[in-house]
Image (cartoon, rainbow, N blue to C red):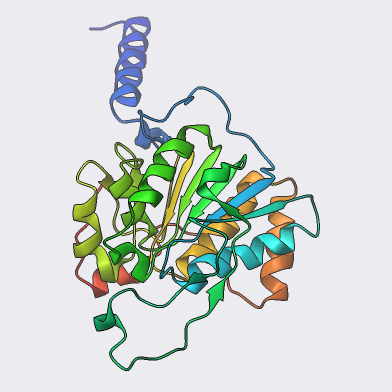
Length: 267
């Protein structure tokens, strides 16, 4: 017969081994951060101040102004600085480059005035990259070059919708978990064969890299970013979402569009 002391020791060792092999059974959720993310052992900065938005030709308006509107409200509670980046200081046209994407020759596309050029290289804490028709623009090399140069210096890098396709082509998402618009999944994900594309996902946080699914999902990502990265973030989210009457989706896996567009479960 095995003694009580020996039985206890065997049980303890077995339990320790089980918890080592299957941490989720102990209620420990594995980190979503990529092993390739620099500075994994260091806490990421809070209260980022200088926030930039990339403005490539044909970007989707809500990809920029959805998150911008939320952060503008944050700026009423703490000091923030806005940077709108483009190739030149000329107004950036949001109309599609391809005539085939504007078959009725509509003129219902605003032009947005940037504050800085890529060549200015303003100091940034956060950079947002929008998508839309911009992600299908065949002339994006200046944007790729800028993203490759600035990415290592950023505290946070955020893609909205098919902006992930632009970032993927630049190579800055390689090795990172990211998501994108499920309606454009089959056209965007091949642009980043070394990206760990995640579905279903309304947004994905992977260290300093944040990415959202289609358009309005970028607002939920931004609210989660505010919740995590700014002092009194929970109250900021409640106040701002209430003032704009937006029901915030707080579960990053709440993504019905993955099933709708038959996007398989990945990563």
